[in-house]
Image (cartoon, rainbow, N blue to C red; front, side):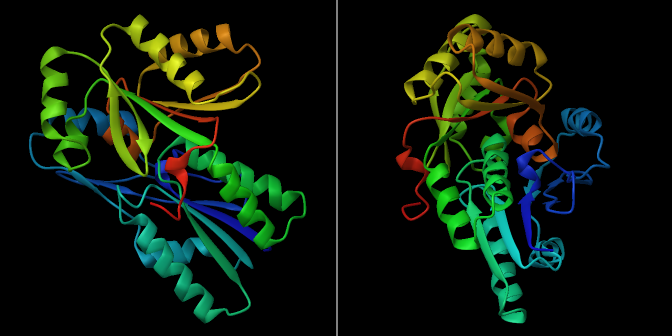
Amino acid sequence: MKYKIVADSSCNIVSGEDSTFASVPMKIVAEREYVDDANLDVAQMVEDLKQYKGKSGSSCPNVGEWLEAFGDAEEVFGITISKHLSGSYNAARHAADTYMAEHPERKVFIFDSLATGPEMMMLAQKIRQCEDAGDDFETTKEKVLDYHNHLHTLFCLESMNNLARNGRVNIAVAKIAGMLGIRVAGEAKGGQVAPVHKPRGLRKTTQMLVDMVRERGFRDGGYIRVAHCFAEEAAADFREALLAEFPNARFMLEPTTALCSYYAEVGGLIIGFEGAFNTHNDNRLF
């Protein structure tokens, strides 16, 4: 096999359409372990966690799982959730070093998405486009790194409890938002979760998200990918508002799988899109 794209399951895709893509499962650990793969009933997991009052968290794929996913590809492109949110990137890097030591003629590069969810699959699609066009390994890597610099991730959450409990956001911010019953909107900045706005009401939230997308350089005809955690209405409202301003936008909607469902929680949206140069996506700085 010439090339393979391997992403951890925070990309919200847990099975490949063909042999050139593989998803390595993250895990949610609570009263039991939930493996983020095609066999998991995400709705049941969410319901279980609502009833569970104990400590919960997530764990990343280990080095062996990454190595197994690499298979026997001559070229491997790995994509991980931000290294500031998980150990997945470090595990993937160790796997890459091991793979290349065992097979000196093969090549591996790991992209730290500095985000999660839709942006990861946008990187995967760009890799596939380059490889299918005949680009060599180094050219593909450089083109995708450049593309990454023009991607953005926003989020809009009804709850940040799981993020706060696991040290991803400030506990005080999460508690205040919960007490006031307001949504929190923010963005990925240098691989960190950065709350920006706390709008009240779905209509104000929807318009604010469209404003944030525009302000970050999205243009009509651009690609935007939205993952929702059991939030069909909010996602549909956002799509309608976005297409009213950008009627030719290439819009894709998908459900979150286990990892993103755990952190986005019910009602959450994660939005990845193409825009202006994003200094917060420079892997050399973060």
